[in-house]
Length: 201
Image (cartoon, rainbow, N blue to C red):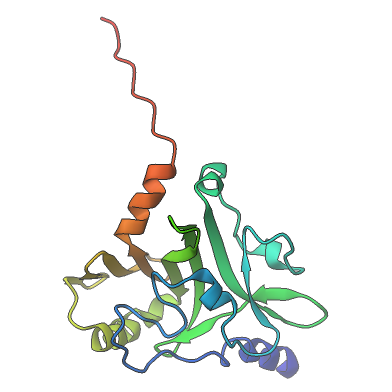
């Protein structure tokens, strides 16, 4: 039992904890809203770690077990969904967790092709164990400054067009970061809902 446990731990401790202060808004150390996707794709990851995206032509074995697929409308809007993966042995790739505020965190990254043709990260979602909420909240408040809204189970920060939220959804701690301007770009590319027909009396 010890060897498999050590193998699992090795998947989550190698990436930086992202605890050092940064002048960039809502920087988590690993990535930042607005950065080019290729900056993350070609970052200096530990050995046998790579970024895998929904639009990649070739994905490693096991990547299909992590939900990366997007609806056809999102694909047509030139959106890409990505996550970090690591080889757990025998070419079996699993999602790699990042340590954020001392807690193992699953991260997903959404990128959209901007007007210049560059893919930029416009949304990041993280999930931690539920019991990590208070400790992560304290760490992020120290790192990002006072939030615009804070309740016992929900926190929201705003910096220009960038928003960060974290919540206890009764299943875990959820962290959500997004750029509202790039979301508007996405909305402009999605099909408009058909107007509802008025009922005849």
